[in-house]
Image 1 (cartoon, rainbow, N blue to C red):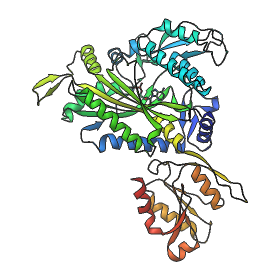
Image 2 (tube, protein in one colour):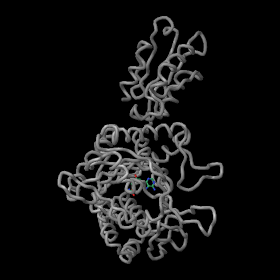
Image 3 (cartoon, helix red, strand yellow):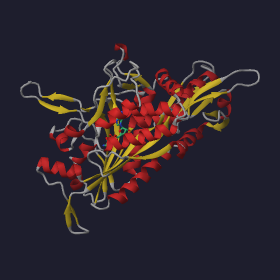
Image 4 (tube, helix red, strand yellow):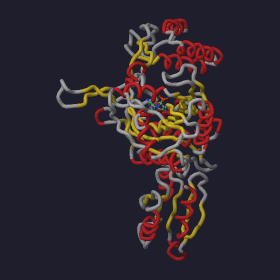
Length: 479
Ligand code: GAP
């Protein structure tokens, strides 16, 4: 499926209708490329964040986590190269005044070619674009756009300006008196909070190279072409890990982390054919090797995670700008050096979108005498916002009390949900739509023999089990 815009739009509507994701400040008509997570979206996001955190810190003896501030000393961004280099080549359509990122404009056109069956031309066009971006040859890039008669989707014309660079950082003022206020930036990546704390963590944690520092948190980018729902936002969350290594070993660790991170993505229950690596031709200002892990979203293969060999670029520059030594004494080789870094950087919101895209299904359940269908989210149980729904068949005869008692026993261990309204079939469908993997129904038999019906979301199969086994059954599935 190269591009299934209908499915993508269905996912966006589903997210809004079922309390996953809303446009930000919607009562004021929203804010472009900013979104709020609702009651189930925030649970899903938290579960993904926790799963990443556990994999990267708890399960690894040589990685620790931190939580650095969003605001940082402004020199941080001079040293990191973001003030001078964190910009994208942009082009404006003179008729619609709409601004595009050059690579997105060309990629969009390549997608159109692909849809029209001109795959070879699309591949050649993207290869040319990669080559020209790698050398920042804006004149030739402009020619490429002109020669292919690429049009603006709003005006429908090819009346383009020259290509210019545009910095993506948001700035604000620190301090209340305007003459004394300092311009500071909202961090465009969480990584710099790790670099500036490298020695604090290494010394206080007595960390020995190779070791890593992980962090999750908000990042901000003034994306010009902010579209495709939560795929590209102006305020988003990253889950990053900087792995500090001995210089000269970066190739080996880069390969190691590529493999480890792909394993993590596959552990989310997504099949291998939905992923691919994309090696960068044009490297970011800090990298000597870089690739993306791409997932096949309904809108095509797109980046979810970046893995970058950042050399000693960041630590060396922070050492130079701060005039503080950022070195490590390696007792094994009896030498001081500035460590090299391999970074893994995955977008939390993009992972949410990936999990939603993979989980969203529309199933036709029609039989010979009845048309029927359901929409479900086949989340891996450990990521599902609600693990267990407890549904008394009736609102009377002591059934709600038994159901409440099950909830009380299970809720310290995982997220439960109680519902007694509507017919049981309707309640099951509502739980399918928010991805609840297990529903249990309390009925009159439960009173007599202490059993209930457990219903499995994916297979819709039901079986009778003892009430006192419920907690154990669910816990086994969500470990
Ligand atoms: N520290 C390295 C770094 O920030 P990046 O490739 O620019 O690298 C890493 O970003 C990840 O952050 C991306 O793979 C993507 O998942 C996520 N990301 C970047 N920009 C984003 C945006 N505007 N909206 C949502 N996620 C974004």
